[in-house]
Image 1 (cartoon, protein in one colour):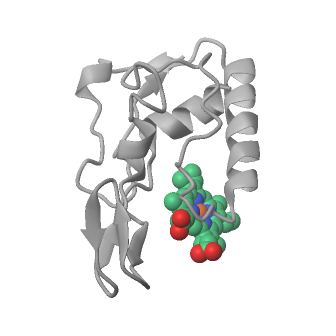
Image 2: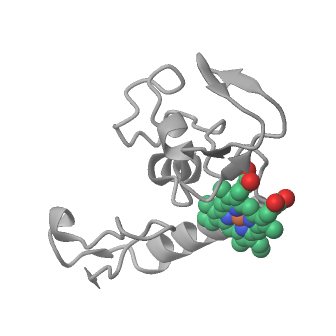
Length: 126
Ligand code: HEM
């Protein structure tokens, strides 16, 4: 459950889902003409209060399985990603139970300027 919520909360590949309309279509009251480009924000969808109650809260108990972190067309690597994340977190916290941040969380350098979201560095101590 924690893995799904982390995938929802950070939606790290927001913006990679660009689309080209193959026919005229209306979405949410907006007309999109054939041939027009659309950049789909999966982060907005994953932070939509209609879809997830109190979306700005990181809640590992919420059961966020229907997030769009892997895109509307579904990333082919998602099963591998889920397995890797479960194994990494299980192993890390079992082997290094005293693992903790070595800097204030609010000072962490997030990649707000990159296509794939993440951290430039994550100082830790144990
Ligand atoms: C946390 C890690 C990952 C995230 C958040 C992620 C996210 C995404 C997203 C948003 C898309 C676009 C889906 C769409 O067009 O609607 C995508 C496509 C894709 N991903 Fe990932 N991905 C991750 C890791 C991986 C890994 C590890 C692999 C391969 C081992 C992989 C292989 C692919 C492939 C092949 C596509 C293209 C699928 C297609 O166009 O049919 N991804 N991914």
